[in-house]
Image (cartoon, rainbow, N blue to C red; front, side):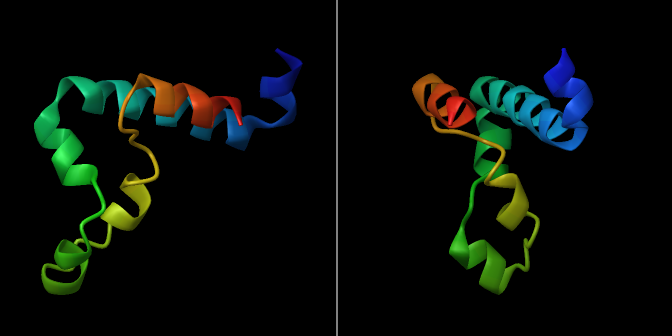
Length: 69
């Protein structure tokens, strides 16, 4: 628990990423909405995908590997 107290922002990002990814695994519509689509950024101005694409992962192994490193 010292890690959470010493690095609260990193811990919050870690937890938020896990929760967001798990939610996106179960909701394909959300997964597609949060993915990075260059066309959507340039034409539709969906700039939020620049941030949300870093929160979702392709599968469980991708999520676990990224959370460990």
